[in-house]
Image (cartoon, rainbow, N blue to C red; front, side, top):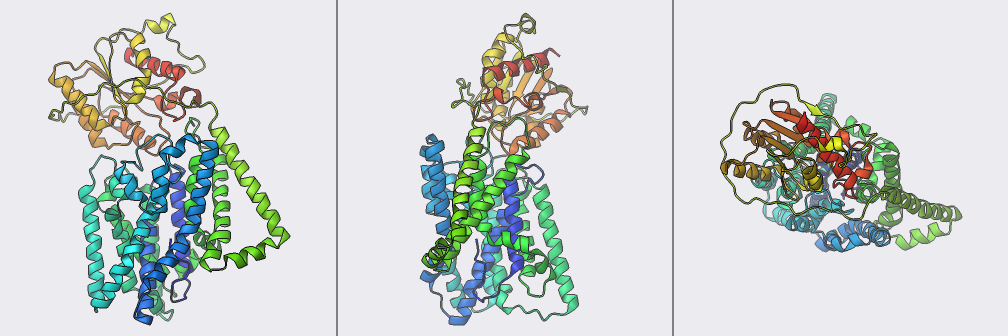
Length: 607
């Protein structure tokens, strides 16, 4: 995160307001609030802002001194970023050591890569998805963005100094920067595979550096120290209108964009960067009225602490959230998480960041310790915050088992080309509701046993269908269950193609997918088109405590409505309020949940 003051000494409060809006968007995204699906775009705004301010500082110093002390620059960056992050990492480490020691072994690489600022590449090389993983989230998984920024801070000053020294014309220097941005954008578009997990292009320094370079190019074209408040009224009004349109456009993108759509990776993030650069240019201008509005006290206060809020909010959310939560929205928990994040960020800002940045750690600390009021406040917060977090953690861990049991999957390796029928009948979607949940289904009940045989029925799914497999086999003798841990919809297509090629495609098909990540409607259309001759298709929606849950269920519902032989089985609604059905991960089923799930599918087949 950039420093509050640029090197010319002029404070730009509007940029702090932009920081505040961006970090609030990121927090909303990490809280899994569906009304702000594009909250992850706040990170993209931060990238552009960082590129602008860092380049603006270096250029200002170069013009003043005709040289750059790189060692001094990197020391200042380290003093700005490292202390607060190291304290946060230490707190997370101690917390896990006391509360959930088993997770520490799996997070060793995350801690080391975060401290050395290559966390994003660690996640890429170890194929850790930012979007498609339902195991316990890493409480420091958000530090990938700081790794990209720090890599930029290490390399960019060297490149920029060479450019300032050998490229005399400012226009050429801007073109070189924009050329680098274009290469990065093209890399994102080429590497991204539609319908697949976009984590590679989302994490990559190579595919995200264009935002920083666009901000850097803006700093060359629009240096803050050259801006003056003496502008004509019409020019000022035009500038504010342009900035307002850019701000509204960014907010619309945050409110309507999904990380699972192709738009972001085929120009959407580039558009966000351009809009952010335009907005930053307006907010950096001393004559801007919009800058005064965004620089209001509440937003400015949050913006000044945006770095601390960013590094603290995610571990607070992850470590105090229950993975098993079938009751949905919990405002009390969210308010506590927000409060704890801001309190911790404020303490970090006042006691760690500011004293170290100003070189006054010992002086500040000794002065504050001598005040009795400060001592009581510190004692209060030091006692209150751990108690609140511990209570939330314990509450979130109740009624959860420590392990998830699944069965050995059936894997298919043959891949066959498939022609796509185009007929898609249009009819209202059919939903199969759950049996009455005041009386749980029991596989020993004679009425349930008489539902019917499973001859001619094939179930294709992931580990959830494997949980229910023994109960499905008892309710539906003869059913063929093809499940695979971690299966995606693209892999299910191979199973269908193989069955068709061998003449073994049954007349009734159960499709249970979406646990392990999102997919687009084209992939689902392709799968269902290949089943056009099947008499009955049951499409089971999902319950998974991750961001893609609603996107998956919406896609399943919309596409199922287009096929006359498809019925949507509403497992999400059927399992509402039934935490006891699930193991600790909030996805896999215990015995009670597996029985209920199997009876739900059996009754749907009967109908």
